[in-house]
Image (cartoon, rainbow, N blue to C red; front, side, top):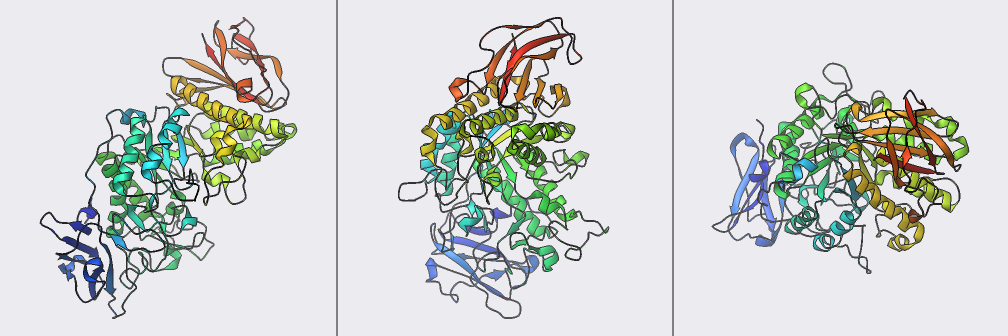
Length: 607
C-alpha cells in the first residue's frame, strides 16, 4: 500500500516531550539497534522493536537530541552483523569522508511564492543558469562557499544576467566529490559541504527575492554501493534488484533501484515531494531518465531481462515517474519537473491522463548534439551540414523542449563551448555569440552551464572555482553582456516564448540557403507580435539580404551579436528604419533588405 510521506514516520524524529524516535525499514533483519553519540556507540544499549509485519523497527531514545550522530546496526536474517548503516531517511549527515547520520528537525511545509507558478509554466520565458554549487566560487584557501555565502552572491549575479531560474546540480548528500552529486546516498539530506537545511532554505528565499526560480537535480535512477549506504541494506537486496541484469549499472558502477517494490517507490517519490514541499523549490530536473525507461539501456543481448510482454520498456520505472509527476502536480501546484531524456520515447512531457510520463519539459539532446556538431565545422564546410541547424524543427513541437548546454558538454575532454568554435580568437568568440543568438531565438526554453555565460576557455573542473579572471577580459565580458541582453530581450518579447511549444509560434523564412549558410525565421506570440531572427554562419557579411514578410511594415534591428559592445565588428543595420517593399520573396508579397553581419545573429522587430 502506497504511502505519500514515509519521511514523516521513518528516520529520526525529535519529540516535543524530549528524546528522539528512531524508525527504519529492514523487513528481513533479525535484529536492529541504534548506535550514536547518545550511547557511546554501544550496539547493546538501544535495540529497536519490530512493528509486526511492516518490516519497520522503531524505538524512542530518551537522551538522544538534535545534532547527535547515529547509525543503525543491523543483523541479517542469517546472523551476519552488517556494516553500520546510515539512515536512508536522514535529514542531515556528516561531512565526508565520515558518514554518520545526524538528528535534524523535519522542515515545515512551504508553498511557492504566489508569483512563481506563472513563471514556471509552459508559455513562460524560462532561461536557466545551471550551477555546480561547490565549484561556482571558492575561498582562496579552497573552502566551499556555504549556502549563506552563495545566497549573498549567486542570486544577484544570475539576476543581473537576466536568467529566470537557477538549477543546482545535486545537493543531496553524496560520498564521492567526483560524482558531482549524481551518486547520492542521502535523498533527504542537503549535503554537509554547503551547510544545513535551514541555510539552504535561506538560499532559496534569497533567489525568490530576486525573482529567480530554483530547480534542483534529483537522481532516482541509481545509487552507489558504499557499504554504509543502501546496498544490501538488511543483508540482501532491498532497495536494489538482486539480479545484476536489473540491479547493476555498468556505465557508472552503481546499483539500480527496484522500482517495482512499493516501499522503494514510496521512498523515491516521497524524496521528490520532500524537496518540493519542504523547501518551496520551483522544480526538479530528473537525471538519467533514459536509463530508467529501458531495461536494455547500455546493455548487450543477454545482459538484460525483458518485461512481462517480452519488450525492453521498464514498466515499473515508467509507473514510478508517472507517480512522481502526479504527486508533485497535486501536492505542489506551480512546481515543474524536467526530464533529462535522450531518446525518442513518446510523450515524455505529455500529461499522464493522455498516456504521457507527466513531465513539464524535456531536455532536447538531439538539438544540442546536432548544433554543437555543426558549430565545430569550419565555416567553409558548413553548407554541407546545414540540416544540422534546421532538423530540430522537424520535431520541435513533439515535446515541451528545453535547449541544454549543460555541464555534460564541458567535461571528459570535450573542452568548453568556446573551445569548440573554429577559427582564430576573434572568430571563435564571434561564432559563440552567433550560436547563442541562434539558441535564444530557437523554440525551446534555455539552459546554460556556469562559466559559459562569459565564454570560459577551459573545460569545467569540479575541484576548483570558475576562472573568474577571464570574465574581466574584453572578449569574455562581451559574451556576458550579450547573454544579459539576450535574456532581457527574451523575457520582454512574448513572441520569443509564449508559443515556445506550439508550431503556431514559428515560421521559416529561409531554411534552405545552404550556400551562404544563412538561416532566417519568425517567432510570434498569440497576438501576432513578431520577431525575425537571422543567423549567418560564415565570416562573409551579407548586404541587401532579402527576407519575405507578410505585409507592409517597418522593422528595426533590436539585437546584433556582431555589435561592437559585444566585441564584434560593428557591421549591421544600426537604428535605421527598414521599410518593407512590395517585392515578393520567400512566398510573401512584401520583403525587407537587411545587412547580415559576419558570423552573427540579428533580431528584427516590427515597429
